[in-house]
Image (cartoon, rainbow over all chains, first blue to last red; front, side, top):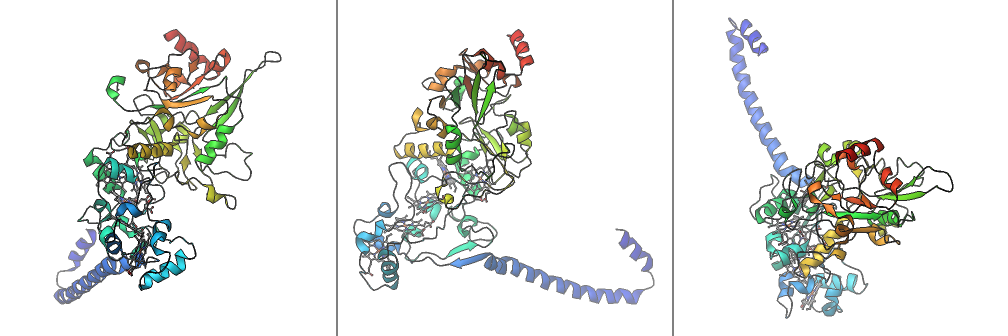
Length: 225
Length: 272
């Protein structure tokens, strides 16, 4: 404020200076627009590229091919144990019955059999949906008690022919699937993002007990350990 | 606030510890540390710095032989219900919502990633049940492999405490969901200390459920904020009105007294 007042005191009689200021104003606006555009590009395009490193799975697994085989369904590889725990990513034991020897000529299968099956090494699968260590998640509560399908949280990985590229946040080490692929955090489908609020929002909607005294929402120990 | 009838199926997990049975062996402390990935240092001689979710104290009646008597008192987090339901001392001072009271289970939770270490809760807790991590945990070579994957490990600068082995509740619920149940049996969810106690001094269960042993032993009176109906039972520092969910049993008068601030006992006595 005060600087504007000071300037107006000196202004009368210095018309030439005013003209020069107008010309400079155009240049400033131009520089501002260029700068803004550059920052937006850095922020929306370059930054996400820098923030996430891209990794390939050790073996490219083809869901569509395997589900086309006889007697194969999700439970052949992703099943519940009797204590209610979830098997998660399959172990070699689920593959050995068919892959003790190379069957076709896919390079992925050859590598899988030679490097893992024959050496008895488990495949170090990268888990897209892996939550931070402090989070407790229960498949049986959602799939059995809640009757939910895999797609609502994982999307269509289970029908895909190739596993997607795994993107890891360089700072936190978390998978990009938690934050979602839209850097602004927008989501279209229910599986686009899996942050705390996404879990909590569905829980509030589905009426999972809201018993926290502090927040009157859900108790923290429902999803944390 | 809520009266018992209205609580429906909500639980109030609690513990009853029989001090006449406790031999002070410390098995509960060891089991607790192993179950909950509690960190320790090479030199644990300074007890102000050590982290003991479950800690056994030794009490003496201060008398000379032949009247001398001692009592061992195991102290987990008391999971106080507080003046209004859930306003336990620690929960009401936490500025970060890192500690919370779950009205569904009656358990006071502590979310380590949320805690920023102001330690108000430690100052507020009258039972010294909360501990501060002055250092990052360092496990002896190879011991990381024995950590419990169901309990997250903590870092330097945050407060931790007993959570009634809540991960065991989560595990038990998974089995229940698998079998299409929503209710747990009494013995499906038991804390590590309860199961480790060779004397059977620690009993754990739902205080709201008359079938559970904790209910039968403590006989909590819902109209008097859970005060024990069993004359053998008492709670620590009852006069502070923290309304803990850990009850102690003893037939010895001096042990009951040791659980209170002496002056306040008389007052409370005059009251009722």
